[in-house]
Figure (cartoon, rainbow, N blue to C red):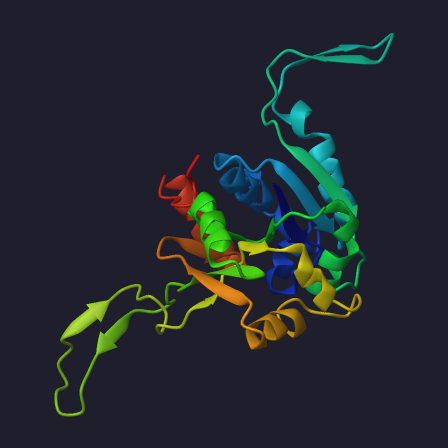
Length: 257
């Protein structure tokens, strides 16, 4: 089964990094976040990836072209230009890097790779969010309900501590340092999609999160898989710092491999 990763956006809210790199190559613990996402899928046996490239896509291609040599000992015959790897492959992934346009929206990127997807359901996520997602359970849930699309719904942790106060009592009775948002469930990526959803995408200008997801909701074809575990995006420099601190402190809950 294939996993599609949207990796073509500009990443403007993380401009401290993305003026140089595409956001999926911004590192957590010395490895790009896209590697962490792929490791989550690979833990569940999903190792066939299609990466939708756009902004600085050539750097994504270069990363995977050099992937094996980065982590292996090698012998290079300068006379014949033959390269021999002395270690076993780091990962047994199959990675297709598809050019999907610089200005193409998220839905348009999916439409552009339709010819690579076949007729079976596929996973899809964004190149900037990690979590301890049970991908196997997600797929089983999708097959069980029989609808066209499944979205993983998450409740992000609030940024600020929360206090419970009443009008009559100035005393702080409860305090939660990191509450779970405001009870709202949001789109956490990690979709399972039937190929039929691509019929809802007309052109490059279509944002997946607006037209298609709303159409699927209207037609009662979008079902939420509620994820109660860890999930965190990397939208800003602060997010990057938080995720790196988790990794360095061996508290990276998304590291399920």
